[in-house]
Length: 86
Image 1 (spheres, rainbow, N blue to C red):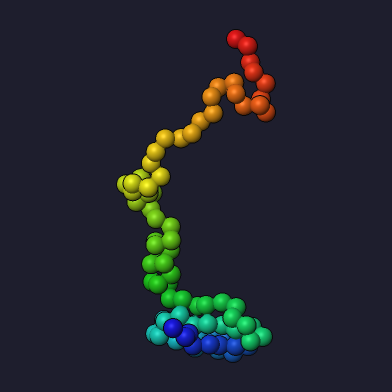
Image 2: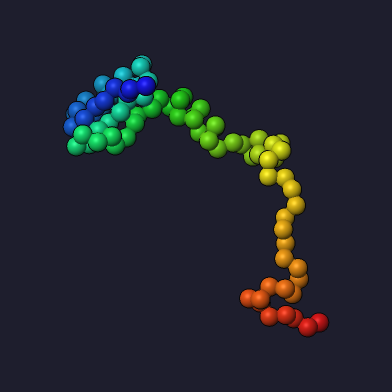
């Protein structure tokens, strides 16, 4: 998918048009000195992407991933800490 491209000078000078186009047509690429610099994305799409990338606490707690036993070192075995005599 090739995004419509706006040189940074045009994006700055015509920001309102850039914003309207983004809302109406979807993401818009902004370039700086011919290199891709940023993408303006409609807020609805941004929120959808964020929910996929960062699941809710409920989703994390309800998932089966990450459940298991923790590997804990035996007490007094850590060479970086002196043993304590009780």
